[in-house]
Length: 395
Ligand code: SF4
Image (cartoon, rainbow, N blue to C red):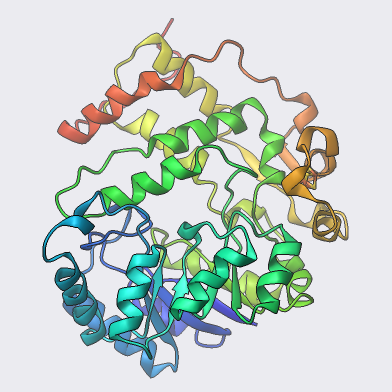
């Protein structure tokens, strides 16, 4: 097993995971010329000296560091004169700081990188959204060696095919993105654009709110989301996947250590959400409570809706044996979760909302359109005034 672990640039993360099979850490500066996979507002600030020192610490422990250059949208600056020179200057700066490899999503950037630095390894980011073997082969032909899967990580026919094509496959294990998420493209573009110099950074990535509302309507969907339990890694190993990625560049050091230990041990006996992102509920709820939000009725309805999911647990010990094996033989890509019902049946066993099973959950009626929140996101971004909002204020 090889783990690929998000770094928050705290050297304690490296020493505390020295006994684990972490092969590679990953991260980058919050704002970069081509942008990356997270909005800068949620990432820890890092200056070049800290970056260099952290990478030295990683190298001393015999591990590598990959920089994320995984934007999927260059906001048309690739057509500017001098684009390639500026990109290569950034790459050279990162290599000088000690970076060992890159995580990239756009073929254009892979091509430039491999032309100038043929021996520097490139992993194809989840942002490339690889969904077919042929897609993966295009990147392999350009010189990339690793394909990272996230949204397709329950498509075992695809995984087998990519492994057969000779790629090293890496599976991202701890995200809670919706199965077949319709908001994904918008979300990836938002992150990519907001992490480039001079770009506005929304106080909340709006697609997260849309995604979270899907769970507000039907929390059982959480169990059909794309996470992989530590106990189920062997299902991937049987088809030739041995590299597992743990995300959380915005997480505290102890959170990352706990997640890495759970996956290295192949077990976690607590609330599975302790090691999963659950960002589509945490981020909108935090924004609605803490940021500049007008106490309008429709906003208060959203607050109340998300508060229903403030106390959610997934009992990882209660999963049926073979939970993922059943998924691995289900053609989830071409099956309606409503018709299949497997994950909803498991949710009834493992998921608790305020201590109650999904069958006792009553979704809110007449949810307002979530687009009402967009002006509030814009306002929070511009003045960052904090007006804590008290639920129940509607009187
Ligand atoms: S199709 Fe069935 S097994 Fe696959 S994610 Fe949906 S409910 Fe789960």
